[in-house]
Length: 389
Ligand SMILES: *[C@@H]1O[C@H](CO)[C@@H](O)[C@H](O)[C@H]1NC(C)=O
Ligand SMILES: *[C@@H]1O[C@H](CO)[C@@H](O)[C@H](O)[C@H]1NC(C)=O
Ligand SMILES: *[C@@H]1O[C@H](CO)[C@@H](O)[C@H](O)[C@H]1NC(C)=O
Image 1 (cartoon, protein in one colour):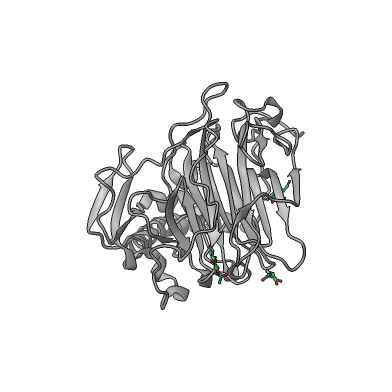
Image 2 (image 1 turned 60 degrees about the vertical axis):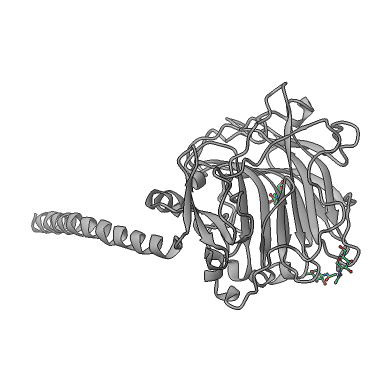
């Protein structure tokens, strides 16, 4: 009996104590968030609010968040690559597809010498807390699935660029899930990678629109999405890294695609990002170890991420299987890579393997024909849902 009373007393003490410190923890957290925001959001010369409410601050280009990275302390800002690889894809010339636009920021974009950086709000920090430090290539969250095409390099060689036109869709996902379509370049171990493409990711963006996304992992497992941590140097004053995409392809209707290219500047070794013919910016070589030399693997394809316990998986691509073909399944076309540093030319890949880890949910068809002059292409994707059990 005495023990029971003691236990009860101890428990209520604990509960009481917990209740009080719970509130002060919330206050401390709030204060910490405010401090974090002050650090993250830079002074700006102008800000632009989009129709969807998102605010972009026009920050002096040499004062943007990237330069908070200790490795970029003495980095010399590059305004453009010193050379472009030959054959850089700007848009589809075959006229099978209609391009998706990168709708520029309203009001002519940011003034000269400044670049648009999404203003981070307290709610963004709270929402994305679960994403910080996640590099899905090194830390599989258990609920991640893939359908892709990989180009592995013969030992000792390297890749210096990858590009494709990617079909643009709006797959359905639930809160807490993400659906991604991307080109992923990597080297290692230890793993270094850069992923670029489009995604629907309500935790990352706070909405269910199809948006551009990028993600990198550099030395010592550093890195993040977009400009959520210092790293990517934005040079474009009109198109932010998280831009929404429009128009979207419809099932059985118009197909819209967008050209994504990532390539290493063969003099500085920085990795540049070009989307739909616009140069957005670059990841300086000094962020990486192995990837500052070359990439040894290039992957084109889709991924979905769900909490491990989720019964319903997100859709991938158009939400349809690849065997439905053009007009219905999501696609990559005009797939090319750069495999020689000095000649610096985009060519078709030659060591391609396809892979899907849950073919009852999502699959990939490596032998697709989209139309004349659409180059090496494939279909991929699937409905997710309750599958693979
Ligand atoms: C590419 O990177 C790998 C791994 O870092 C390295 O072993 C190889 O020598 C590099 N290739 C070239 C051609 O530089
Ligand atoms: C870089 O590529 C250009 C062609 O785009 C070529 O003329 C030049 O020689 C290359 N430089 C190096 C260092 O490989
Ligand atoms: C490609 O798919 C395989 C599984 O089929 C997966 O293990 C790998 O991580 C995927 N690669 C990328 C970059 O998504």
